[in-house]
Amino acid sequence: MKLKIKTDCSDVDWPAVASLLKRVGMAHYEPHVHKRAFETSYRTVFAYEGSRMVGFGRAISDGEYQGAIYDVAVLPEAQGRGIGTAVVKAIMQGLPHCNFILYTNPGAEGFYEKLGFRSMKTGMALFANPEAMEKFTVKSIDPSS
Image (tube, rainbow, N blue to C red; front, side):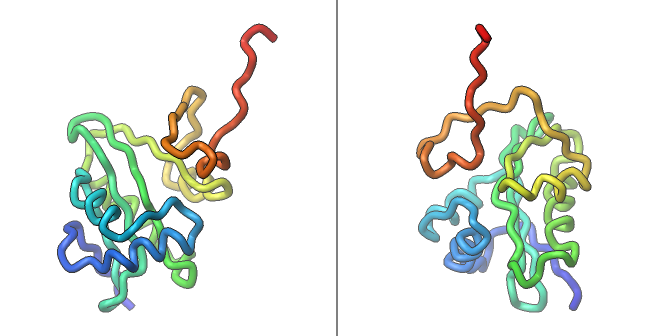
């Protein structure tokens, strides 16, 4: 089936967004929280096969030189068919002159490496819920050792 890419938030099934993020082990919230997050993002992308949403992602950005990609997710049964790649490329096409940062689930780094992303030496984060995000952090290195 042909993949349809949509870049606006009209008629999105927000409970399905929350459910998909939960299914793939990503941070998820109540549907109205995702709705606000996507609607206030600089770029949103939703992928559909027919009327079924099979993937999505978003970017926050200054629109000039920096962008951060978030919430890229594809239905587990639809993974491996290029949908995630189409979503990420559609996000990046909407911000053609930007550098991009992102963080991903452990084990998914290879997917982003195939798209040209590289690990950073200095990435840091301050999470509102550190316990829930523990899988994304590494122990600090003692500079005196």
